[in-house]
Image 1: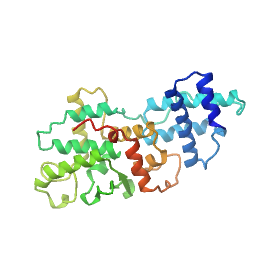
Image 2: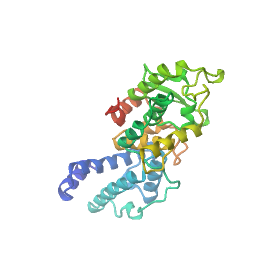
Image 3: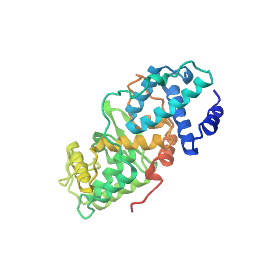
Image 4: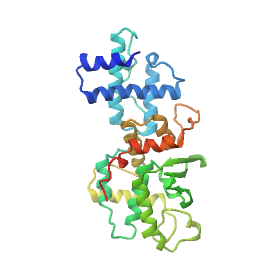
Length: 301
């Protein structure tokens, strides 16, 4: 199907704004990318309701918020309605898609403004202040799981190349691009705080340490984030994983390639058992540079 015809339909017959047209086209492009990854590039015009449902489950697994999914559903309904009007398909698969139950409830997703607000409530006059700021920037800037964060090693920081090596689930390693903001905050933490600590032998290669020079625990990260939320008055239930969901949502909504986000998150989609396509590391780095909000705006000094 010629997407130019669909674009003309949205512009002229639906009289949609430029921004909405671009969003609707991006929704269809996202579905096409999913088909290329997990449906052997099957023509999306032949998708059934079950295929759309699998796509939505896939987006949930990536961390896309319920609000974002609702908007994508709206875009896909418009696309398949157009195909039905043009008699390319007989019935829209979206007729059976209303509010799909995708399993576990996702934590709230934070906006960039909310993340910056949380950071502004970190007390940098305290010894652990710079460490906590670096932790937030790393969680959000790299989309790490909390366990991956507490296990992050100094020897796995490759700032000159713009990557960190992460040990994920199943002891699987992956390289994740890291933006300049997160790099800067980690470097400041190491230079002004960590370098002056008495460090336990079993934690000498661990990046983030507690006051006693030992590894941080998952619980300590949860408590730190909970306290920040309370101080800032943020009325959302958040956890370290919220930053991972925000990372994925902001990249995807910004137009990032699905394969790149999937690779950076380091998990397998529940809709397939295939190992993800190996991506060129330069491509992943460009994805972070182009689409992560933290690399577009450095409002916090």
